[in-house]
Every structure is written in structure tokens, then in C-alpha cells.
Image (cartoon, rainbow, N blue to C red; front, side, top):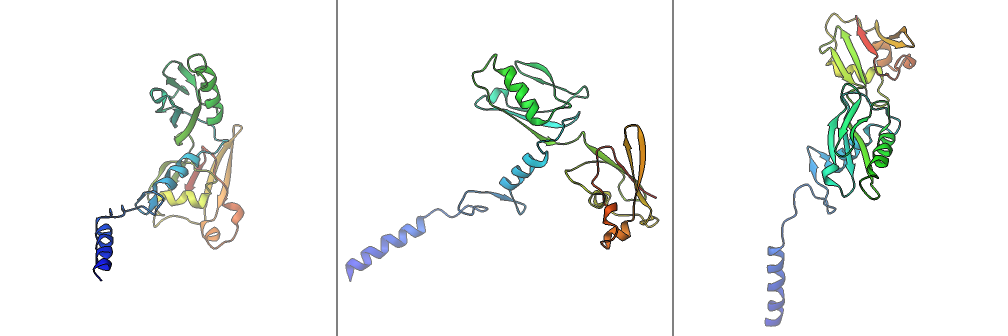
Length: 210
């Protein structure tokens, strides 16, 4: 009987001394914040700009050089479309995809570093914007997210005013020097009708709510 007690006591003491589980860990060490996993948020940010995204002025870039912390940095693209990097000076970023820019930086760094590995991520797509004007709560410019439709874009406006003509909304689009007016009947689209009017926005589009 005494031997059984001697075996049980160390087991209980071991359980009491075990460190408590940290909040936000699910066994894999993934932290959570505000109901969204930090790893999920990072992946969403990294993939927000697709491989065919074209960099423009005011975009924020994160440039990472493997094992070269002094060269890893975040910076905005200047109005002239260029960025400045240590060792390399000014480099044109506007008009390139992140992959193309990464390849150029990699090639230029070969003069100073053996086998450089460069990653370019667009963390803020400030150059690709659309505009909302008229009878809404919040007018102004907003970033164009991938595959954003008119209906999704209108959610940025904070709702219509009491005088808004929801049937008469339209999108102004400039292409090749010609302005096109694309109608959008909010009430119909909301009911699942005339869904062809719920077009995917392009940078520079203006949504007008009369």
C-alpha cells in the first residue's frame, strides 16, 4: 500500500508543476489575435498582390534578402516610380511585377553577394485605386483589391444617403482615351438580377451614386 502511495504522489506533483498552455496556441504554436490567426493574416497579406500585379507609385514593398538583414527593408515606391536600396541606389519598380523586380535586384546584387535570394512582396497596394462620388456616406479613393466587384466596392462608402438613386448608379471608366459609362442597378443586383452589371473594377474606375 505504501509503495502505491509513493508512486502516486510524484505523478500528482508532476502534473501540478507542468507549465500552463499559452493562450492562442493550438498545439502547433500558432498565435491568434482578434479571432484571426497571425499566420493566416500574414499569408493573406503576402498573397494579396497576385503574381501578375503591376507595381505603381505609392505602393509599399517589402524586400527581403536571405541571410542579409541589412538589405531587408520595407519602403514606398516614390512618385517617380523608383526605390532606393543599399549598394544598388535607385531602381525602377513601377511597371514591374514583384517577381520581375526581385529578379532585377537579384541580378544586381550578384556583384556584391554570392548567390543572393531576393523576395519582393507588395504589402500595400496604394497605386491601384477606385473612386466613389455622390450620395454616399463616405466619398473618396479606395484601393482596388483583386477581383473586387462594384457591389463589394460600395461597401467602402458606408451606405447610401437618403437621397441616393440606387437604381441609377453607374461606373465611369477611361480606356484608351475614351470614357465609358457602365450602369449598375443596385436594387436589381442585390436581388440577384442583372448580375452582369456587377463588373470587376479596374484601377481608375469611378463609381457615381446620383
